[in-house]
Length: 124
Image (cartoon, rainbow, N blue to C red):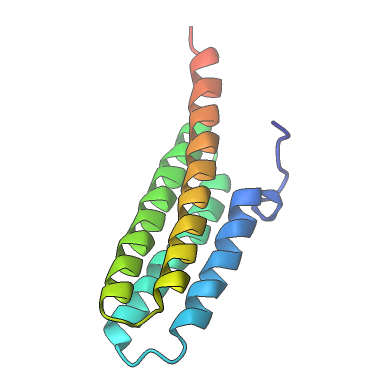
């Protein structure tokens, strides 16, 4: 795995940014402002926690923030089910976004696992 020099170099951050923008676009016309704010906040939290974790000093800290980012991705997926149920989004849009967030979650989990394995190898 190539070490990134900046969080902007991380594929998972790039994907989280694209998906946060997709959530913003999908919710622009939404009149349920509480729902709109919550799903947007969760989507932005994914990219921000990847960035914040990257800027921390240790692999353990980074892995912890990746866990938080993964949790936020799960929150977005959960809200997408409600968006579909309430007919805020068409089923195909909600399903596509859920699939994209699942793929992102897998990438986040892989990086966290790598960081934890790297930390374990350095332990006596």
